[in-house]
Image (cartoon, rainbow, N blue to C red; front, top):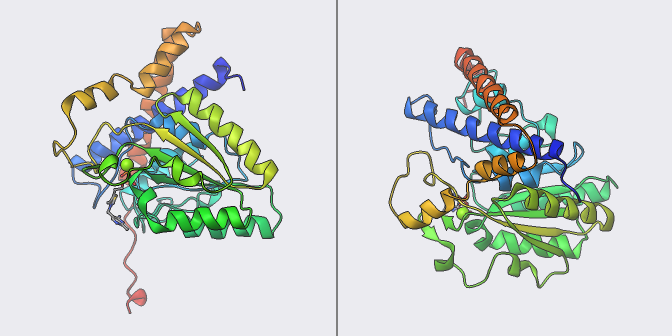
Length: 314
Ligand SMILES: Cc1ncc(C[n+]2csc(CCOP(=O)(O)OP(=O)(O)O)c2C)c(N)n1
Ligand SMILES: [Mg+2]
């Protein structure tokens, strides 16, 4: 499929939104306004946005613990999403779940999981529900390279294949699970683990939003038509540590530098300019997003905390 300038601009704007949103969370975390652990996807925007945007309203997602980008690209409102992450009553889930368990019913986002691999059995249930109700939806279940070593991954691949379920397994491979490189945990590439099952498989340069979008669009069409599972593995990199405050030096400096030079947002910006989009239009998009994130911050910070309800006490 051809990616028009209009579509590329849309993908660019969404990636800029994801990065600004994540930067704002980082800023709030450094001011102790975000409580608990928070996992940011700065650097991975093309993989998140490029795999989520080809989905339609009727489709479902199950994001990862690093899933803010997936939630935003599926349509989550940044104001209430940010309010959720800082635990406010006006948050997406009334401030009860925060970053790692956010869900967004309106946009068919069935919720992130803090337990790695917990999303797989849930996705099988969702796929089965879609099948039994004869819906035309697909379910995209997101996971990291490290999570592909969980037993539930293999069980879900097996059931999705056996029962003809419309599930797309989306691996955001950033090469690390916390401080451990994937190659120290498994001798087989993630997508090869699915090759023993009968499904369509794609791999993509996860820092190239066009390639990711094109390959995911192809899979969405196939899964909807064939009512069979599929898998896509996107190779990318997180620019920050595992969680917002992880700055341990387990990754070689040259490796980090090299991936930063492949920044998916800069790359798309350069491509847009090559295609004749003016620098002014690009700056306008960035400024508009920055302004909207300031408003989201105001909304979230001015929202109340949930009221403690003693009747809920056990
Ligand atoms: C069952 C389980 N084991 C361990 C953890 C702790 N943990 C949280 S994230 C993470 C690494 C996950 O790596 P990956 O799947 O590659 O995702 P990434 O963090 O790189 O996005 C680990 C080990 C957990 N949350 N759940
Ligand atoms: Mg990883």
